[in-house]
Length: 424
Image 1: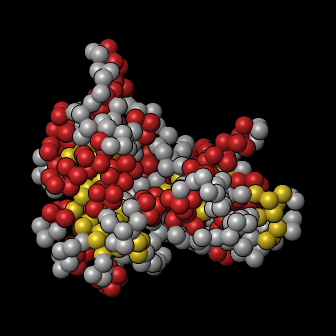
Image 2: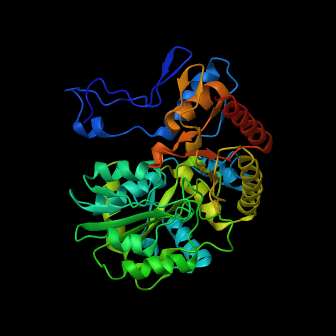
Image 3: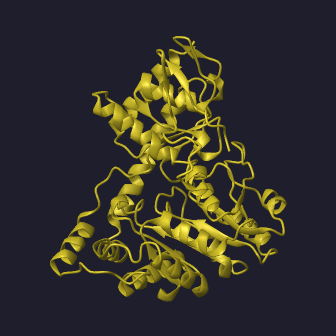
């Protein structure tokens, strides 16, 4: 544990010290070790800072959260209104309404050619809870969980809550931030219990091809003690030909837990609908776990999700096309900024530039020492909110979300370019 006076990520700007983390590790006999060791989500933290500045009248463009800027499609909203009028206002089954689990089962078969019966599906209050259910159901203290770096911010913290040990092989810009079969093989030990990854990936936007997934599956097939948590929440924001799941490969499919949900592909972040497809015994364990935490998720949200998964898919395809156009726009503009280096995302709605060329530069006497400093500088002097790569285990990068209008994106990147140009 860090000492009591530990204060990470401080950058003096104009005589003031700015905190990136809003909760610091401090000696406190009243709090559990569990909460003291748990990090706050830095994506949420940066968004909170940007809202605080906005409340003071500062025109901040917030590109820190992974949230589609679209309104939930009308036919989904209408299904929710009907559910209210029809009186669906009571507790729901822990694992979800049978009709929703059937709709998810049908979706797996129709879109992914995967056979998951309704009994193999558990609906949760968002994909984050689904991940927590899985990890807490399978990981014992000391079990190792392989999580390729860069990783989504909550994977590490959820494993920490389960008292597992995260093992993070480092992927590179040159490999498009994707773990290789050799890296995966090297990381597996007798203590390895789980491999966690996402495709399309947050924060890099990388997407594993079918051939790459098969190569990883062939490695994992040799280690039957290792379960695979495949986070596919960005499935519908995929700029390759077709989404591929590692669960499609026979040699590992029984050990794959697919995590998905409605938030990204259907612009339903506020509805909080996530789900898993897994072996029946794993689904039963997650049902049991969820029963002691939240029970079943919102009845109205579930009725909306049935409409999302069972009816008109055109709004999802229209959103995907908009994200592709925005990807092209942002990628082009970012490449025009001297000193930033980024790969071309193949999915999700993020770019992940390397910003290390700006280390050692300064503004009004404040020196940029790392990406956290740079992000705070961009927030306070460029009025654009992005997330430090430190949050994702990659401290030389930052994440920018292009889930915003074209006009906002153009203005935000213009501000970033001008702010970086003022560094000497």
